[in-house]
Structure formats: structure tokens, C-alpha cells
Image (cartoon, rainbow, N blue to C red; front, side, top):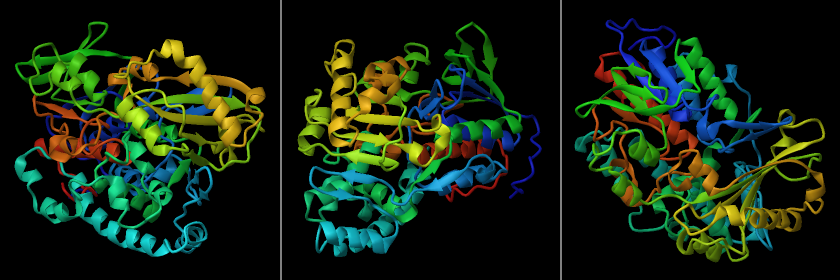
Length: 512
């Protein structure tokens, strides 16, 4: 093992191309550069982050995508492995309560303070605290069994058919949905929803999401959720600083046209301007579906041909409102508003694929804790509405204005913002079509769905099956979408490349 504060000497230094400066690509870049590889990172935009970047408009700053940071310890670990301390690059605030869950007739504010959580449960759902105790105990075991499985690379069947998986199998709740598993702990439907809405982090319905993902609400209640001062996009900026410190060549505003192949081996990338940059290994951090259909020369792929990629199961999409307002509203940092008929709302999004009349939506009002996001006395409101992806027959050009008005109406009526319209100073709207135009397959914001047939060994692997010298990171590959697992994908890829080239390293990933 080597010291984490010393860059190893690599004989015959290997060149690594990384396509995409999202959180997975940035993680891989800073780890590989720390270990002595010559890393070049290509990003089509003029800033880093991808879906974890920022949107700034006239003094208002918004996160484009993620707003919750869970499992902060993974981020801590990858910074340590890059020879840095994450606190030197950004400031964290742990949120207590974590968020507000607003139903039509009841409100919960979940917290990691166990006594306060039990008191809330007994006040709103008498007798439910025993189920909560059972939830924490049972799901802690599931998490301990599953976490090692999420850290594996699954490059071989032996990695899949491992002792860790055999230990985890009894805890995977195979054949059961997330909502069904929560029935083990709670009788109230609203209480079940309070511990299953996290399936939306995967862009899935709680009625379809595999029961194993009961670890999602568990990790929130066990480890808490965090805000980063300046927004979660500051994580990407911090990673980029580490990359620069370790000598990564950051090629922003450089769009990759396609991979260069020698047979089935990737030997480099060709940029849109015709420049060719060769490398020993290539890491793809582009959206999986887009990359398979656009970055690989036609006719090469079999398992992931365009037709087969299109036939995969994808997450829902999101309708986004980024609102700069000249007022600070008395709302928590995070609030989720459930539709009156939540099941019908979910069916409209995932099965019927129509715009629901009865909306669920999420509002981040981070300005109550973070004055850096807007001018003094103003707020940067982030509003997310789950909607069908672009496989639905919805013409967003025709529907954008009416749907925006509907969302604002809902905020005024249900979120206590009765005067919202008169305070809006800046407005940016993203529809599923916007996401699709950003090279995201079907505008599926959360990438490939996390169904059983698209998990672990059955999900696109970090060492790409069809092309040599090629690695995949990001939400569309193993372990899945969400910032912590995307960081893990970057770490897995970096570790596999390091091991292939005989570079000794120290990692908190217990599977390396």
C-alpha cells in the first residue's frame, strides 16, 4: 500500500481519456491523476458538473439536478483517496429535520434524532413507533449486506456469484416492491409513502421499485442529509479543483464526436472539430443511452445496439422550475407535496404516461439556510415535478406554458405562496424535451430504471462488456443513479484501471 499523500511513480505513464465532467467522470479523473496517470477530461459544456452543475441567472444560483447529499462518507472517502480533505473545498450543513412531507391532512418532518422522530410518529400515527424501530433494525442489516455488493465491479461472473452476494440474497426481497416491503413496518398508507417516496431518486414508482431499495430511506435516517453552501454543484467545482491540482488536462467546451476503435478496442476519441486524442484507456461519463447510440461507430455494438438500448426500461423525467423571487418564504429547506390521490399520480407518470391533474411536487427553498444563492432578501426556488419521459406522446412545445401555470397555481394554493407570481423576477423552465436536448436518452433524468433485470451484474458494467480499454461511469451504469453511487462508479473504474496497469493504491472501497 502507498501513502495517500504521495503520488506514485508510474513507469511508462499511461494516458487516460475521460468523456464527460459529471460527478462520475470527475471522481475517476481526480483518483487516476493522483495515482500518476496522465488524464485528459473532455466536457462539451464550458463548465463541469453535467446534471450536477449550476444554473446562474442575474444573481440567482440554482443546482441543475441533485439537491440532496446522502451517504456523505463516500464523498469523504474519494477525496481522501485523492489526497485531499473535502472540507477544504466546500462547507456542509447537516439538515435537521431532513425535509417536510406534506399530505393533504398530515405533515411529517423526518429527523435522524430518534426520540423526536418517534414523538412525531406517535402524534400523527399512534402505535407506529414500534414499526419504526423494526424498520431501523431490519434495514440496517440489509444495508450492511448490500453495500459490499454495490462496491463490486461485476466484470466477471465470479464477482457476481460471490460470497457477499450469497450473504445479501436473503435480504434482497426479490419479487417484492418497495411499497410492499414497507408494509412490514407500517399499516398507514401515508406512512408507507413517507418511507418510499425515495424511489423517486431513482425515477421509479414505489410500486415497481425493487424492495431491496428500502435501504434508501434507511440511509437517510441513519446517516442524515446534507446541504453544501453554494449548492451541491459546489461538489463538482471542488472536484475540478482537485483535478487541476493533480495535473488533469481539463478540455471544457470540447465535444466528443465518437470513439476511435482498433477492432473492438478503444484507442482514443475524435472531437467534433476533427481533432483526435489517443489514450491507453477511455472512461465514458456520457449518458449511457446517448453514448451507445452516438459515440460508438455504427454497427459495432451487439448487446447495446441502438434498438436494444431503446428497448431498455428508463426512469421518469422531470419538469423543472428555477425561480428567482424577491422574497424569502417561510418554508423548510426541502418540502415534498404529495398528490391527493398519489397512486393515480404515479400511474399517470409511469404507466399511463400522461400529465396528471393531481400533482406531486418538490420545492427546495435553500435560501432559508444559504444566503449565497440569491441577493439579500431574495430566494432561489427549485421546483421539481415528476412527469413521463419522452417516450410519452406529450408535445411539450404546446404544453409548457399551461403546465407551468398549473405548477405555480399548486405552489400558491398548497405551499403557502399565495403571492408567488408577483414576486418572480427570474424564471427558467426545463421540460423532458430540454433534458433530451442535453443528450439524455428519452429525457429520462434518472437514466436507466433500477428494475431487477437492470441491477448489479445485469446493469451496464463499469468495465464495458463490448469494447476493450473502455470503462463506464455515471447513473446509467453500476451501481446506479444518485450522487453517492455515481461517485462509487468513478471509484470502481479508477480502481480497475489502476489494477490493470499495476499501480498500487489505497482505497476505502472494500472490494478492491
